[in-house]
Length: 218
Ligand code: TZP
Ligand code: MG
Image 1 (spheres, protein in one colour):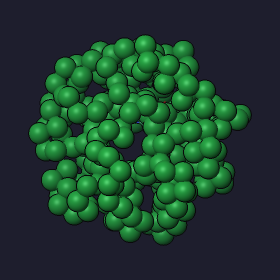
Image 2 (cartoon, protein in one colour):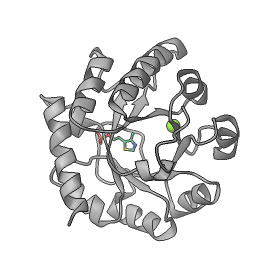
Image 3 (tube, rainbow, N blue to C red):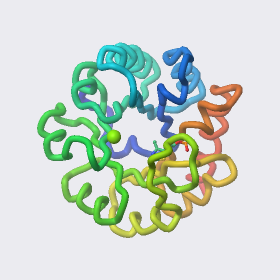
Image 4 (cartoon, rainbow, N blue to C red):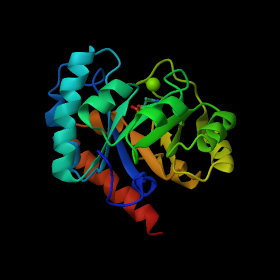
């Protein structure tokens, strides 16, 4: 699980796809993940809000295996126990999940820990607490997470002002607006529906990879 390849913060850039088990209800999750990896994404999160621990772990083990095969970073959402049990590269926590300090203490050295920030204050304290990245959203209106706070592009910019660790933009990002999130200072774009809702997931992933790459070389 320990990432020796390079600085763990350098891996939080470009396309980040969250494999949302509820969004994908009934679909073959490892198969969908393989398409995302085939499309070139190298940063993957597993979100399973309603799965049992057993179901979550079983999926996490499969996805971790696939990510190893493709050289991708694998992050588990919410659950430190599942992250540890599957040997994930990292853990993503929200403001009501385990505190960052406890997660840092319990995850293996070198693990990635990302924090969702609802405000510049949250973001600054995540950075002060040694988070590896901060996620800000929802940057655009989204149907995927109904209880999410809407920070908008202005919320993203306000958070960019106070942190220098990698910044992940999330929420409603698609082909027509991704550029605004990058312009606002996001290092990485975390997508669910724009990729997983596409008729051809591999193709949608590779198109986003191309867009994000092109932006970096500007
Ligand atoms: N957190 C903030 S918005 C969001 C999450 C998990 C949903 C993102 O999904 P989509 O489909 O990319 O808007
Ligand atoms: Mg959470």
